[in-house]
Length: 277
Image (cartoon, rainbow, N blue to C red; front, side):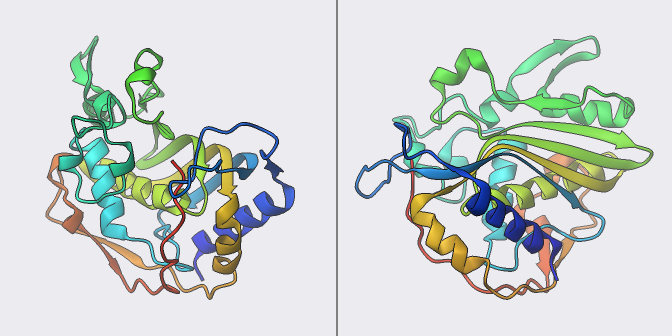
């Protein structure tokens, strides 16, 4: 059975049994349909490890739209874009500004260049440079939480930093997330960053190792509680195998079609979820 499903079930039970409700607070998120407060039950400081050598971490308890998941991570990390016209899904439409962007968020921050002793690079290219030329570095970090421009972002970055670390010939990663909507986004983020680690590893001649996911505020929205309780009762299946186009070696040559899940058996879609914005 999928270890990813087991981790998700354990996390959900921990949040529901040991979490804290914010119903006594004025909260920023509102339900899209009626603008009422979107309250949550939360657990502080959830940390999960995914061994990418053993299985690809995608849920089988429910269907995850893998292509859209990969498309978004390429939009942020490869295209380094904030323009919705560069994204092939509607998941960011609620946060679009009058220019069709999400402001100076996510990919916009990764594309900004800085001067280093090695030359001028944006954050992604500096990571690639170090993986190839200085893999023993303990400074291979990208950070999208730019305080100077937070006011110009449609949404403060949730998954805001990635640390890459090479041990021998193995690439490991830490994904730091300030906030995680557990039903909607938890496994979405895990799966897409697992793909990203594979991309960095292949581009640098390394093997994938662990993805460590650190979540400061892991929460379930009030209207999602009955849904998540139903999901964790579903049948689990074996994890699918990730197949990556062997002809692609360059980080910027990957496309959503470069990744295929073989034998992805799941227990069906969740259906249309209430949206909090």
